[in-house]
Image 1 (cartoon, rainbow, N blue to C red):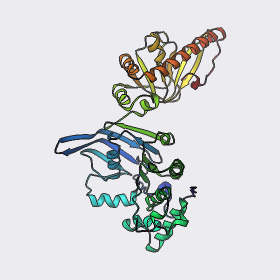
Image 2 (cartoon, one colour):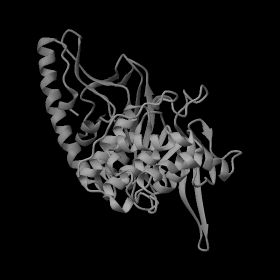
Image 3 (cartoon, rainbow, N blue to C red):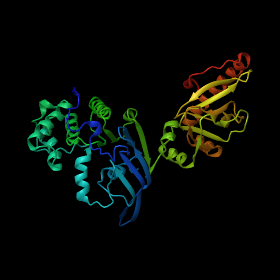
Image 4 (cartoon, rainbow, N blue to C red):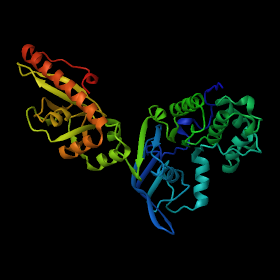
Length: 405
């Protein structure tokens, strides 16, 4: 089944990039969660599902949230949509505090105007046509003139390539087309935020690909999209990938740097790693000193430097966020093989994992150990070769960091 994604219909009074924005909210994050705790109580006692979540999502990002069953991702999504309320903490979405001084009726009206939700099982009303399903949010939120609603609903169905099926009932079209219609319905009030809960879970790969293409287009037009998914192939296409494990968020730098770890192991590293900041040009490690940590780059650019025979810096490589250093010394038991400094442009933020914790990590993850061993050996050979060349020529040369990282 082929789907056609068309340009978003223009609206002379409200563009996608500014929909839902006011002077007060324009510079604020789309989603700002602070110290979110959610405790469920039943006859067996209390169970803490979310354990102090801090999360900021900026406007115009395409974010995926992943986690195993029971990790808390659906509960987290319910916090963002205002469907459920936190036991403790603050939820601000599109500049609005969802739970301070607001009742369920207030949140329901806010949802209708600010949020579009795409469900895994579509949730289309079976007795209404696709066109009528798309019109429903406009009716509920009392948006647009009554006579304008059918035209706008048809424009949205045209956007997702379903204009010819507009008068059909949901059961008369394919599952992929039902999900596309559900996305059109989620866009009915032109909300700035789209939240999708496993939107491709019941679709074939081709249909799923079209859904992600549509989300990409919406983000380019100014929407913010937050998607819960189990499909790792989809997370590679999002701006950010947020992993939740046992009610806590895994540091995004840890997940990017050590992707072969299990989520449980990533969470341990998140808790044990120390965050460090270095100013532009500041030394991080000097050559021939004892190295006691494994360093993961969170922000900024790190330069690996050798010194030529004329005291000129030989920049071996420039490492970027998601890359690492220090593994050569920890695995070989040597002193630092090069100097390391923050590049001159911006500050550098690192996560440092102590030696003993690093060794425990390798013991628990043989695949990670094997990968780091290969990189360490490659870097060691490259650095020795470059060191010899640097002392013989005194020439500064930059090398592609991908050959060493």
